[in-house]
Each structure stands twice: as C-alpha cells, then as structure tokens.
Amino acid sequence: MKVLKSIAYAVTLPVLLILLWWVLTIDSTNFYVPKPGELATTFVDTWFGERFREDVLPSIARFAAGTLLAIVLGIAAGVCIGSIRWLRSLLEPMLEFFRAIPPPVLVPILMVLVGINDRMKVIVIVFGAIWPVLLNTIEGVRAVDPVLVDTARTYGLTRWQRLRTLVLPSAAPQIAAGIRQALSIGLILMVISEMFASSSGLGFTIVLFQRSFAVTEMWSGIVLLGLIGVAVSIVFQVCERRVLHWYYGQKEVQHGR
Image 1 (cartoon, rainbow, N blue to C red):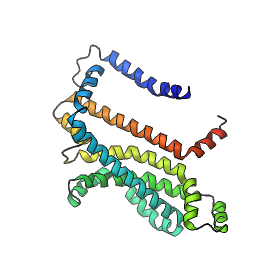
Image 2: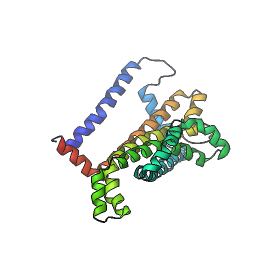
Image 3: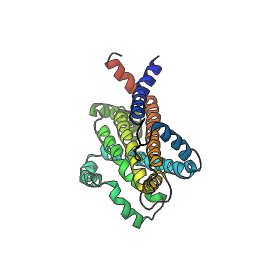
Image 4: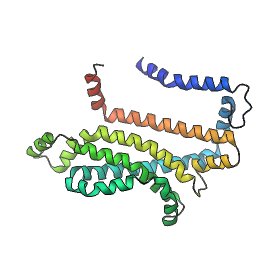
C-alpha cells in the first residue's frame, strides 16, 4: 500500500502537466512547441535505434566514469583533509579558489592540453562533480564526535578500524548528500562537454538538431536527458536507502513514524 501511494505521488503531477500541455496545444500551429503525441512518436523514432548505440550509450558511459571517479576521489581526499587539521588549514584557500571556477570555462583549455577526446569530457565532469562530495566529506569527518574518537583510540582500535567502524559511518549521511548533488552536476557537465567540438553524444546531437531546425527532435533529446536524470535519481535513492538503512530508521523513530 505504501509503495502504491508513493507511485501515485510520483506520477500524478507529470500526468496532470502532460494533460495541460495536450489541452493547450490542441489547435496550436506553433513550430517551436510540439504536441505531446507528436513528441512521443518522434522520441521513439529518434532514440530507439542506431542513435541509442552511437550517442546515448557513449554519453552514459562518460557520465558514469566521470561521476564515479569524482565520488571516489572526493571521498578519499575528503577523509584525509577532514582528519588532519593542519592539512585542512593549508588546503582550504586553494579548495575555495578551484571550487569557484566554473567547469565549462575549462573546456577550451582542456581541448588544447588533453585533446578532443573522451578523456577531456571525463575530466570536465570530474572537476565539476567532485566538489560537493569533497566538501561534504570534509564536514562529515570533522563532525565526528571527538569523545567517540578518543574512546575508540583508548580501546586500541587502529586508524583503519576507526575509519571503517566510526568515521565513515558517522560521515555517511553527509557524503550521500554530496553524491546526490554530484550526480546532477555530472549530468549537466556531460551535456556541456559534448557541445564543444564533439562528434557524438547527447549534447552534440541536441545542438545538431537545434542548428538544423529539427525542433521536435531537439525536444525529444531534452526529454531523454530528463528521463536519464530521473532514472539515476531512483537508482541512487534505492542504494542510499540500503546503505543508510540505520540512519533512516533512526529518523523515523525520532519522528514517531
């Protein structure tokens, strides 16, 4: 019953918006706003075929590689920086400097330094997606109760044991919040990195449709990006619920659910 209720909440608003869109475009002849039925047909014709293999799958692979790398590097660096006070003081100004640089401005520079290839696109994704993971991990590690750390040290737990049984579980909710932000940033940067001097991928294809005035096909690409974002979010929520089941159970008890 709870699952059905959640599904009803999730689909009700999209269905109402599509109905509203359908009503408003019944007699429309606007070239730039396709009708829902026309868009659905174009979506199937455009993306369920050769283009799925040549454009969609490479984009998803770049997004997965870049985001996964950003998550691993962000957690590893965040644990080190958050655990060592002098290292945090040393690196904090530098982190703020690099965090303020918008990743899209690096694309022309990376095109010269790395070349126009998949590695350049992955680096752009990593550079933008690593910050929420890194900063949330640092704050999560810093917030670990010092009394618990001293107690663990008193009981003779090694550094690795304290990290595995105390630091990472305590910081996990904030790390998960950082990963959630990194996923959406990674998806945005995947599209942006493919818009510059690329010959395949969703970003390249959407720009190609725009320049050739294939408006309905361009809208279908935008819809596909939204659906990929929803799918990534659902997968992450399922994984987060499983990994942090103790945390959500604790919250439900606190709220009396």
